[in-house]
Image 1: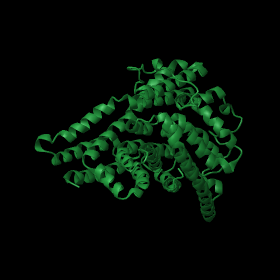
Image 2 (image 1 turned 135 degrees about the vertical axis):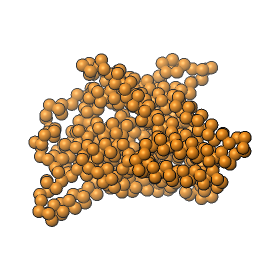
Image 3 (image 1 turned 45 degrees about the vertical axis):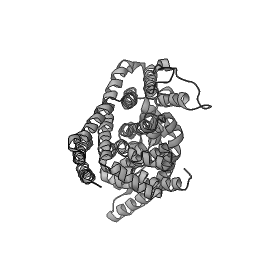
Image 4 (image 1 turned 120 degrees about the vertical axis):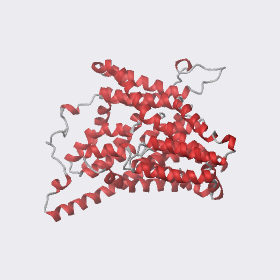
Length: 476
C-alpha cells in the first residue's frame, strides 16, 4: 500500500468519526473524496498530479446529471408524496393491519410484515415509518406493548429491506449501472430469496425477544410496585388518538388501498421475461429506439412512467385532492433529489477516490488469496459502513464496486454479489442510530434512537449471518 492508500485509510477513519459525531454524510463523503484524491496525486507523475481530483469532479458532474438515478428515484419519491397527500397509503396500511387488531400475539410479527410490505411501493424508509406509525403505534399501545418494543417493530419493518423488491430502489440502480442487468430482473429474481430469508429470521428473533422484553418489564414493574400498564406506557382502547375497530377513521377504500401497488404491478407485468411478461410497453412511450436497438435509458424511464401512472391512479380515486397531485409530485421529486440523489453523487465520488487510491485493488487481492471471504465480506463490510453512516444507499454505492471485479475474477455472478451487498447495507442502515428512519421511529414512539438500534441489531445480525451461511452452502 502506497502513500495514497495510507492517506485513504486515515481519511476514511476520520470520515467515520465525523459521521458518528453527527456531521452531514454528504459533506463528509465529498470532503473525504477530495482529500483522498489529493493524496492519490502524490503517487502520480508530477505532471499528472491532478488526475485523481479530475476523476472525482467528473464523477460528481456525471452522476449529478445521470438519468439512471435521477428519473427513477425522483419519480418514486414524487409518487410517495402523492400517496401521502391523497391518503392512499393509509388505506393500504389499514387493510394490512385489520387482521391484527383482535389477535394480540400476532402484533409484533404482523407490524414488521406490514412495514415491509408498505416499504415495497413507498421505497423511502422514513416515509414508510411516517405512513404506518399513526396506525400501528396506537394499536400496539392499546394492546399493552411498551414503546421501545413498538419502535423496534416499526423500525425493523420499515427498513429491513422491502424497498429492494421495488425496481426503483437506488441500490438496484447501482448494480444495474455496473452489470447492465435490469432492476426489474434483480427485484424479481436475485433479491427475493435473500430479502425474504432476512425478513423471516429477523421476525422470528424479534418476536422471541419481545416476549423476553415484556417479561423483563413486568418483573421491573412489580419490583417498583407499579402496574404493568403504567410501566409500559400502554393506553386503553379509549385513549385519545387510538383508532378502535369500526371508527370512521378506519373505513377502508379498497380502490385507494390498491393505488400504492399500481407502479410495482405495472413494472413486473411489463418487465419480467417470458412467460411471466403480460404485456410490453412500446418504446415510443418511453425512449424511442436508436438504430433498431432499445435505448439504454428505457429501463430507468420505464420506472418513471410507472410512477406517473400511479400518480394518475391516485388522482382518479381521490378527485377532491386531484388538483394538487402534480404539485405534490414535483415536491417529492425535489425531496428525492436533495436527499437520495445527492447521497448517490457524493458516495460515487467517495468510491472513485477510494478506487484510485488502490484500496479496491487491495481488497481484490485479499479475496483472490482467500475466495471464501467473498460472501462474508460482501455482506459485513457494507453492513458496517451503513451502520456508521446511517445510509444503506451510500454504502451500496460506495462499496459495490469493490466486489464487482473480484466476483467476476472468481467466476461468480456479480449481480448475485450485488444483491448480498444491498441486503447487508439495508441491515446496517436499520441498526444505525443516526439513520433517518431510526430517528423518525424514535420520534413517533418517544424513545431513544440508540435503544431502538440496539433492539433491532440482534435480529438483523442473526438474519444476515443466516443469509451468508446459506449462500456459502449454495442454498441461496
